Image 1 (tube, helix red, strand yellow):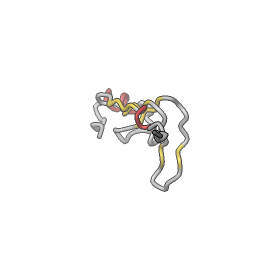
Image 2: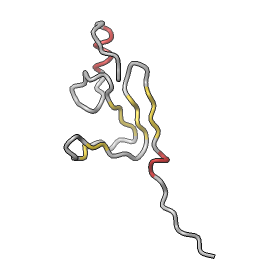
Image 3: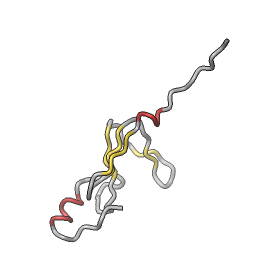
Length: 78
């Protein structure tokens, strides 16, 4: 009997954590692709993706939500 070789599913190793009033933390082997189809550089084991739209480094979170929230002008994360 022959058992077909299986390819490990890389998505099985990805974890996404929703931070209250903060970013999405993505852990694991991912590729982030922009609207134009180009791959965005990001080689960390964990990346923080902005949900509030206030970042100066889209799509990465730069902590702008903390400053805006403290000033009372932050948008609620999407």
